[in-house]
Length: 138
Length: 138
DNA sequence: CAGCATCCCGGGGGATACTG
DNA sequence: CAGTATCCCCCGGGATGCTG
Image: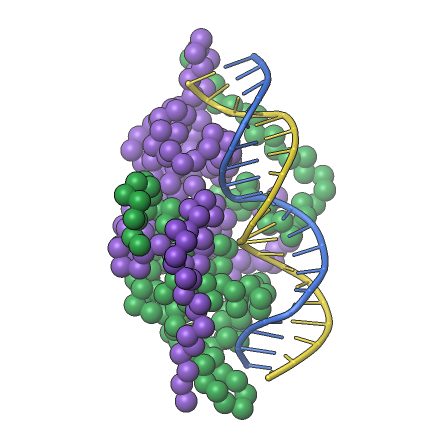
């Protein structure tokens, strides 16, 4: 299709970037693959908290968006290798920066307050900041 | 807390970054604010496709995560200004890169195929690519 | 080994209407 | 002007189980 409508100039290409890179795992997978071609199980090992299903799905989307290339070796024990395409590799710098930023953020701010990790059940005792502290001014 | 458990080192800080920056609008808003302090309506104008609700919510989350500062001027016509914090400004480079990348991606690949924009209901007639084109190899 | 299939859930995200 | 308040829908994401 590629924008049949003619309008919707997207205003801000960041939205497009987020469409491609959105989701919790895309960039993490990308970063993994920056280390070189890897097969499914290697990726899985590198991202212990992702489920197979999610890994598969995200990989497929990344493939559809032209960021990774999937190569199937039809052997007796099936082997599938994933590699970054040129497009995928073009995210090298960005992934590095985001990773560094994430580290730094964790250091200086701790875990983000807004998005509760859901599966990190909150140690019971942290009373939730209640962001009500409005910065009033005149 | 800062990781009381000792384990769960997050493996990849990118996940953290995505928790903070995830969501369709966060970075777009950030980028808007990189232009300087703006009030609600200005932001809204700069991001025509976002709804008030979303703008409010995302701004609140960004505030909670320490990326933007919200200043309320209690005047007769209420005025609220949003500005980036230091932390928010630290994303300058990343936002720029992502924006540039988004532009480039749109140019070279067109709209991302994976994430259907949901509210662009697919013109009915496009039979879904069926990504079956597996890159086989021996 | 590398995956689909299935079931399930929460919340992200949108539209619209109302308010201080 | 700058929000809340509702309602609603979809899909990201997880768990588990089965197969070529």
